[in-house]
Image (cartoon, rainbow over all chains, first blue to last red; front, side):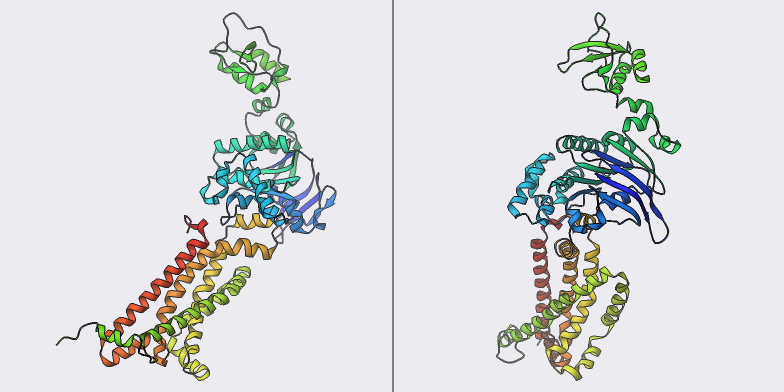
Length: 317
Length: 221
């Protein structure tokens, strides 16, 4: 667990980047720091691995003040991923990934084996291993960045806008990949972004910060969308809050009606109650000419239907 | 009868005539006097350049001093040094070293500045300590820019050595004075051809070294 205990960062010119931040980042979950530029989210992140030291207050990692630990030693135990990946241009991909293990004194063979294993894990072709960073696309470089951060199997991963510089399609696939990895690895992840959609998609907990480095709200994504603490958070969440919140409500509770004669998956919007959200079910209903969303199972068999009125009722909770 | 531009028999007789002004000896001296200042310059420029990159306030004064040095006529520097080092190769090597510094210090500084900030940041964040970061990350990334400066320094050093002929230590430059005094073109042509060839070879060697040292920079440089 990472604890921010009354942390303030004030610069020599008087600028306050982070103002009295107190927050707990739970172990094994993704906590997202989100907010507009100048809200101190990156500064807060960097105080965890001592890239920046606080002016006041303490940052505790598993109960221990990070400023009591030698910075280099501390950092070798914390994975770090940044926007442009920060790969070493003069080293091959495999050696980039092996960086921290080598710093920790692993022998070269073991470090490289580990690097190859991780490249596979983040979905990269082993053929990439011998290439240099400039030979990879932005999305591939970012995968390498994630592999590198995971190389020494650190319990904590810091990610500073890691997917902001890639196009939306690649970004979506990197986000899915991160969630998939996290479901296997259960790291304690602190993820910084200015993109609220990314925050609610990835975060188990979302901490919204406002300009001046003040914490506005900490909540699970669904709670954030349904109960924003104030106007700033409401505005930051943007439009379609109600619809987006439905993305966090599972569709499995919906009462299904038997499918009327002649109604099949053909020509209707469909959803899978076992896996999809209420948002997907509502979307399916809106896509059907007769307003019925057709529920199907994993094999595509029709389980029943649900109408728009019932969906809106369910959405109201 | 017209004098031919090049008299091949002169070259054959003077290539290796055993004397101190045989072309072969002049060429060897030329290489030494051009090569030593560039290597010495690089060895001095790396620590000075690193200091300038680290302490930004040092950079402008250092470059200012170096530019003044660069603007000094080499002949003036020779005459000052003559009283100390006499009519030796050292009298040529010292000013040429200073001239090469004027090119190489900015090259080292620019090289260090060519290290992308996100790369430096990620090195810090992964737990590199400053010395290891310098040696394993920053210096290797600076190599293409430093080598580009080294090419300029090497070529200009090779051409500047000739001026030393005025104090009797100019390597191939002797051929220019000799030919001019006798109104005899063959040594001048030989001198020009060899100086240019030397410059081309030095440039080529550095280019090949760069290819081998920095395969990762091929598309970026």
